[in-house]
Image 1 (tube, rainbow over the protein chains, first blue to last red):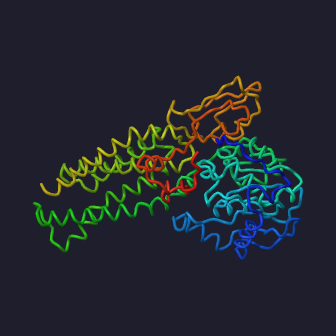
Image 2 (spheres, each protein chain N blue to C red):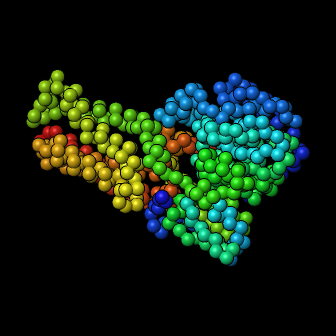
Image 3 (cartoon, rainbow over the protein chains, first blue to last red):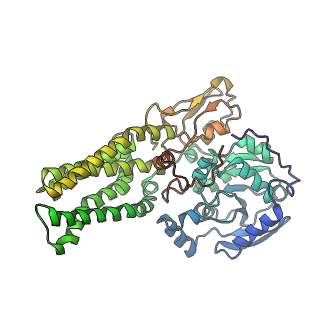
Length: 379
Length: 102
């Protein structure tokens, strides 16, 4: 926490407070102009405010699809500003959200038929939960945006509705002290917002729980798969060289025209190991016994190594089989451990403990496996 | 369903003598770690805590303490290797680029 005394922006001295209001508002306004999700402008006491569509169109869907595959993911932001849904007035509720376009899309598509304000704060294009956990979605930024958008002049009610998952970054009592608005934490999911507003801002216990459904667990798989392309190219080069060396110096040389095919077939167990780690481990997460994610990955890796050795490589030598059992579970354990960052429930202390045990074992297992594998090509 | 991670590992602590029963910790906790009984909050499912820090930050009485952080192996690894910049590459949508130093 910042121990420095923060100057409290008074409701009526926004012109001089935290932000240089004039140019800031002009810049963000210019940015959103012409965006596919802007449907019009609403005249207010502080000037025109953009009205936002509650329906996602082709551009939004294409953008989401690209982002989900890891393309331009770090640069998918919208201008921080106050936006209007429908035709809100001074008594309408104010929702606060992140300026990650995916978060904004998920929010606005649930708001059909409602009249309210959406205050989009600058979270550097990062989603609500991650930004709250890492400090971009914070009390100071919230207070700054309240002042910058001249919100106190636009609404009479002094309440801001924040997504519950913003709470790791925002201190409700501190925010009230800084900007004069009471903070109400709304539901975790945007889909529950109409029900929440309809029930006079009462949150049902079910709206407070994070879900981690099959879809949630697999939504990051495409991004993770894209991230494995580089290491896999390295692995391909490794097997190509290994086969080349074996061809030149090994005991059972393959002929040069078989080299590409041999390289590919050598890769298969490891390609599938990557799929097991990135897709199958998240998919089966609640059903794999044990708690640590590296362990869960290792279990499925052992299972795959067993299947492969029994059914696909039953004529492989013992060295090669040993290499499979050492390398494949190491890969899946690592990928399982990596999945901690995508879950909704792993703690820093837990992951640190898990890594301290798993990482050395993974490195030893993979190294031994690699030595065994290389040896298997030459004896 | 509620997922539970490792046992007896989190840093969450609570000083019940400071609690005024406002229930804010119950509101903000994404893992339903707290229960309110007779206007006093208690940690009733400690192992479910993911150390997001929402309770501690939003407790007006400073009755709750936790070392907050993100349980992300890749982030921790990059931190250990002292690689700055994108904490998660392109894997989780977070970035350490703009974190205040405090």
